Image (tube, rainbow, N blue to C red; front, top):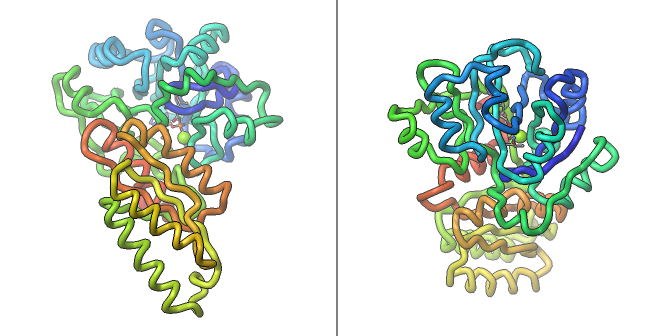
Length: 333
Ligand code: TXA
Ligand code: MG
C-alpha cells in the first residue's frame, strides 16, 4: 500500500491486480466494503485492456486526461479488483509524482482518497504522515512547488457506462465543459448513491458543527447574537464553557469588522475565535477547505462558520462538499 499525491487530493493505492492488497486498503481507511475504488492509469491506451471505451468516453479522455476526471466504464474482464459491480471507475491523474508512481508500478493502481472514511480528504504532507505512517508500506510526499497546483477537492465523476452520461460527483471540471465535448446533456441523477455506492455515505465531515452563511455580514450578525447570548444567559451550558469558533470566508473589507469583534470575544472567557481562514477565490477556497476542517478538528473547534461559495468555476463542487459535510444523517443520500 502506497500513499501518493495527486492533483486533487492524496490517494492510498495498491496494484489493482493484487486483490488482497486492495482489500487491505479498506481496513486502513475503515471504508465500507461496498464502496468501490477508482483505478488509476498512466495512459488511456491501457484502460482499453480492462474497460470498454465508447467514442464519447474517448472524447472526454482526449480533452481532459490526464487530469481531475473519473469515468465509470463497463468492465471487459474481471482481472482488476472490484466490489462486484459490472463497471469500473478509471482516472489518469496529472500530478507528476502520481504519474511516475503508476508508470513505474507497471500495473493499474486502485486508490481511494487517502483519509479515514468519512473524514475530510488529505491535501498536505503532514496530514498523510500523521495518519498513515506505520500503517502503509510507503508514503510519497510532494514538493512545496506541487502544492500551488493542488485543486484540493476530488475529481469530477461521470458515469459513461450507459447511453445517458450522468454526473455522479461534481469537481473542478464543470458539467458545462463536459456537455460541450459530448454535445449532449449530462444527467444529474436524483440519487447518485444508487449508482455510486460511496455517495450514500457521509463524507468530509469535521468534528465541530458546520454552519453555512450567505455572506460575511451574516457571519458578523451571528457572532454578534452569539456574543449577546453569552452575556445574557451565563447559565446556559454552551455559553459558560468556553468554545472555539473558526471562520472560512472570502477576503473582503467586512472581515475587518469580524476581526474586531472576535478580539472582544477572545477577551471574554466564553468563546474564542481559533482562526479566520481567508479565501481569495473559489480556487483558493477549494484548495484550503479540507485542511481548514482538519485544523479545526486538531484544535477541537466546536462551531465552524463557512461562507457559501460564489457562482462560477468550482461552485457546484464546493457546495456539494459543504452539503455532505453538514449532513449528520448517513441515510439521506
Ligand atoms: O480525485 C479523486 O478522485 C481521488 C484521487 C485519489 O484520485 N480519489 C477519490 O476516491 O476521491 P474515493 O474513493 O474517495 O471516491 C471515489 C468515488 C466514490 O464515491 C465511489 O463510490 C465512486 O467513486 N466509484 C468508484 N467506482 C465506481 C463504480 N464502478 N461505479 C460508480 N461509482 C464508483
Ligand atoms: Mg474519498
